[in-house]
Image (cartoon, rainbow, N blue to C red; front, side, top):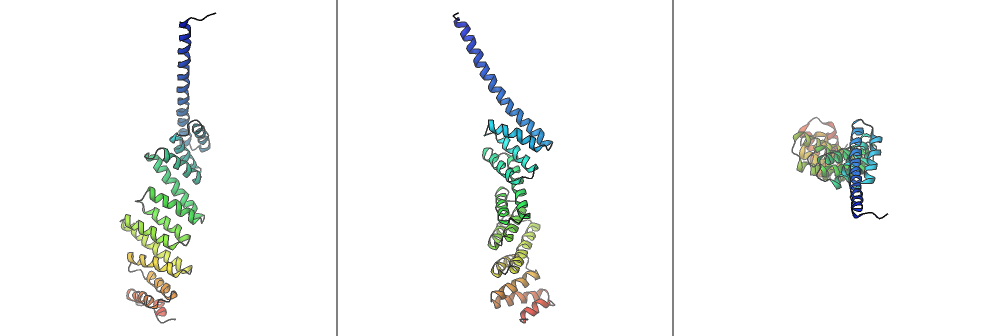
Length: 256
């Protein structure tokens, strides 16, 4: 039976409306999945949240909130590498969002600390350097990066990152920590048999803490190992100016 033009038009309208409703339903489903994932995150049900978020990303690979929530779930699971990867993707898609920046910072910090604790010093240094780029006004980023470089015996990089921190941060307590890290780093370099690296770190530390007796003693020892007797005696005489009864400095000056 032949359909009238009116019936055909009505069928076309129904079809168009059906497509529109299906599209709206799809969008609502994505938003619903995100809402469910957020609730699961808040309840610390991280694996269930990630299952929802994986489906969102499958349907919409540019949905930045899915990557953000995924990073937060991985932080909860203490899976730092996955957290960092997801947070970086969220940053690519939403570079100005404050929650994304905060989550990436937390991921980098956690990953750096974990790497430092397990002795993966180069990995830790890289993560802390990225953290510094994200938060250049925080002293702990520079200090942690320096400690990672010291762990890997990269004395030059350790001194450089502390110098960067000193150029940006004026807080007296933070600067004291910078000085302590330089002086401790000089001691580590000396104990590792790398006198030249020790000299560089100790000289910078003394600029910040000009009355630190141990720093001058170690500086004197490092110069002696390098055969730089004049510089060694100068450092050791400074020890006696600060602490006239220091027997170690006296022995070193007398060559005993």
